[in-house]
Image 1: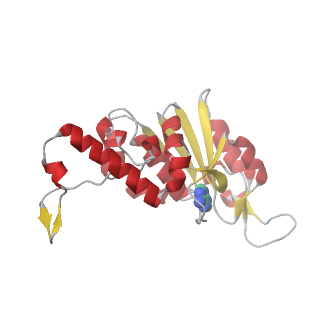
Image 2: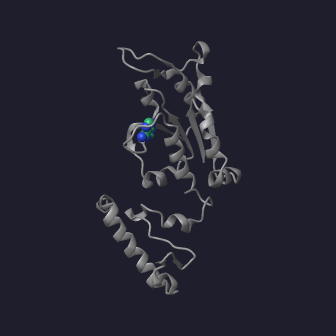
Image 3: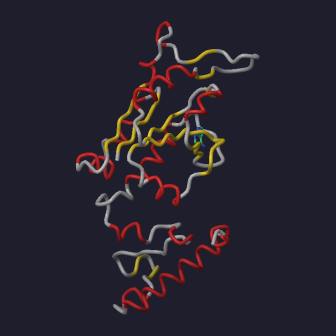
Amino acid sequence: MRIDILTLFPKMFAGFLNESIIKRAIEQKKVEINIIDFRKYSKAPHNRVDDYPYGGGAGMVLMPEPIFNAVDDLKGENTFIILCTPQGKVYDQKLAYDLTKREHIIIICGHYEGFDERIRTLADLEVSIGDFVLTGGEIPSMAITDSIVRLLDGVILEDSHMNDSFNNNLLDYPVYTKPQDFRGMKVPDVLLSGHHENIRKWRLEEQIKRTKLRRPDLLKKG
Ligand code: ADE
């Protein structure tokens, strides 16, 4: 899989690409991630990428040309284009799974006060990572990329994401490690019993209990 991220702030991605699981996935060629500064696609003086909004109003608006030029340059036959915006479909684990099947994804990070409406015509999907507004699409693009890459074959043990929260619309069950008694808080006996069937049942019960309590909306998703 190849993911191209179009941004005006490529330095924001340095830590993301050079640590932990994402770094390893890139080294092991499970994914290719390119960070592209779309300013270089601007033909305006001083590589300008934004201008004042027609009709007036506060803030600057991203111009369509640099982003269209970048997409023209990068797009292939099987490219899926995501635009990060708080007005998009709210991202979830199911969408992360769906995106793992794509060969090539371009993620466009909006910035400043907004982007020219015509940029929307490029997108196959507009995605929001939640009902709050960030300064730009960089953090959403990292969140989306991270959620996809960890699901790619061989990136983490499949067992590790089989039980992820949101699979089957349930939150994950509680886990414990050493010591068995920490400041009076004990590991549940069933986990020490070695009885696999009882452990499986306990975990499922805990998932249901926790989801009912914290996220009853997930149970209604069916
Ligand atoms: N850009 C700014 N806020 C955002 C959000 N919540 N989701 C996706 N892109 C954004």
